[in-house]
Each structure stands twice: as structure tokens, then as C-alpha cells.
Image (cartoon, rainbow, N blue to C red; front, side, top):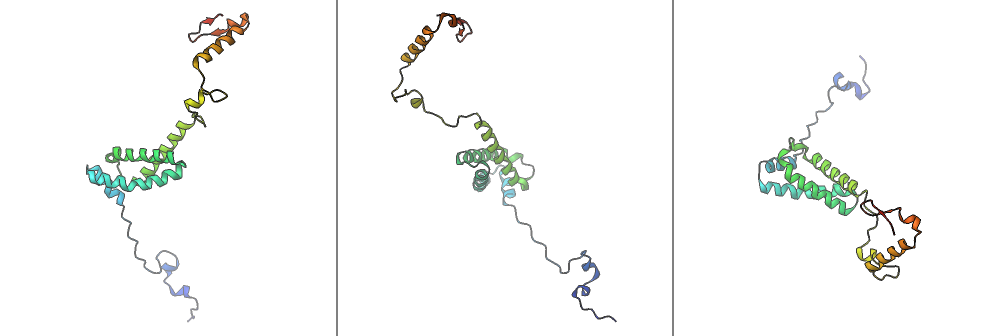
Length: 174
């Protein structure tokens, strides 16, 4: 008989092969999905469940929209859009267990849509008061502006005046 010095040989052969765990570990109970139950109740038409769902989802949507959008005003818009879609389309959600990923996708899409809308916006927006101010800060009289433009046109050489077109595409002669 051979003396066993290693503890590895004392376990059954199946356990050493990794087929059976050495110790039986009790399975971890699944975490209850609070959103799935609320989505089911809200989808059935319960207004109190819809209110509870929207109240719970609001904080999650805000945190995720801030991380995706970056700016507070865009995050608010994305969160509001996600809450509106949650309210409108809760009854159409086929898998209530997948509500949280659906919400994250909705927030992300709203952030991307807001970003696409802002691409062509100017970086700095002047107020109308600032835009109508002259060099010295005094308001510009529209009649003076028109007179100045007419004087500039009149000062042009007559040979160039036929090259100007009005808003209908007709050549303007001075």
C-alpha cells in the first residue's frame, strides 16, 4: 500500500477532474426584478403602478443620461424623453425583465438625437439687442442701414450695377 501525502488524492476522481464540485454550494437565489413586476402592473392599466414605475425610473434615467449626454440640459431632455416613451409604450414591452436595458437604450438614443440636432447650431448666440447694436453700442436705425446700403450701391460703377439681382432673380440697375 502506498501512503497518500497529498490532499489532492483524497478527493474522489470526478471532483479532481472538475466534473463535480468538491463541496456542494447552495445556488444563489435570483434577485427579484422590481421593474418587471411594475411594468406588468402598469401595462395592465394600473395608474398607481405607472406612477411608481416612473418615480423609480426617473433617478436611474437621470444618472445614465448624465453619463451619456454629459451636459445637464441635454440630460434633462433625454430623461424626459425616456419617461414619456416609458409612459406611452409600457404596454408594448414584450419582455418586462428586459425593461432596464430598454430604458438605457431609450436614454442613449435620446442623447444621440439631441446631439445630432445641435450640430448645426452656432456656438455663441447673440441676443437681438446685441446684434442690432452699432460699434459704439448704440442701437442701429433700420432706415439708416438701408440708406447706407443704397449709397454703397449708388457709388458703384454703373458697369457693375447690372450684376446685382433682387430676391426674384431680376437684375437690378441703378
